[in-house]
Image (cartoon, rainbow, N blue to C red):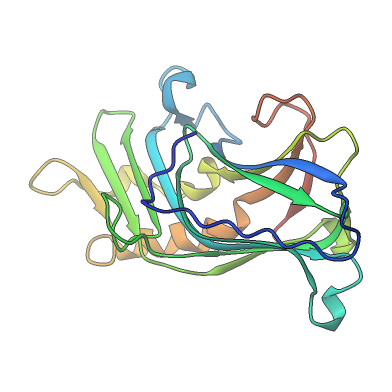
Amino acid sequence: MIFIASQLFACVTETGNPEYDFQGSLVALARTSSPADVGAGAGRRAEPRVVVDQAAITLREIRFEEAGSCGGGGRSEADIEGPWTVELIQAGALPLELAVRSFCRLRLRLDRAEGGVHDDRSVSIEGTRRDGTPFVIESRATPELELRAEGGEPFQIDDEALDLLLAFDLAGWLAFDLDVLSPGGDGTIRIDDDTNDGALDQFEDALEDSLQLFEDTQGDRDVADGDTPLAAAP
């Protein structure tokens, strides 16, 4: 795992039973629901529309809320407090211990990195189009994202789960048309607050819809075919 942030603060707070029912890791990683369209890293298919070489995101807080508590203020079972900047292509993991396995929702907030190569940005992406043109996306958005089980019912972590996977779908992030954008004088397509801001708006709108929480029952810290998400954007 690779942490880009200079400091990582993790605070896991138990409630109720002092014995932990789940002990594993929360793994943040990139996936692509359409590998023929958007590829990631060295494991990509031949000639997708877009290749993502780097995708970094900074999280301020991750909060699991116990089942039955969301209607009355959302008692927290575990808070993981950052900032935590992770390179999603290579994945990064935080130790996670939970006294219960049933939750009504998962909340997380993006934040801007402080210092380093991603300073003042919450999401940074670098890649190339099929024609070889490089692109860079830099977002400063800091939304709070919320994941729930389908139908709004509580989600249950299976006894066989080894880790939890916080998976960001690059195909969802890059659903807008990169081919219509022109590179600047340095030959790079830039998408940020000052350049191609319409494409940036589409990218930021897709941040929550492209996030899902999975169980990892195989111990490979990757989303396998047929895996069903525990929770997704409502």
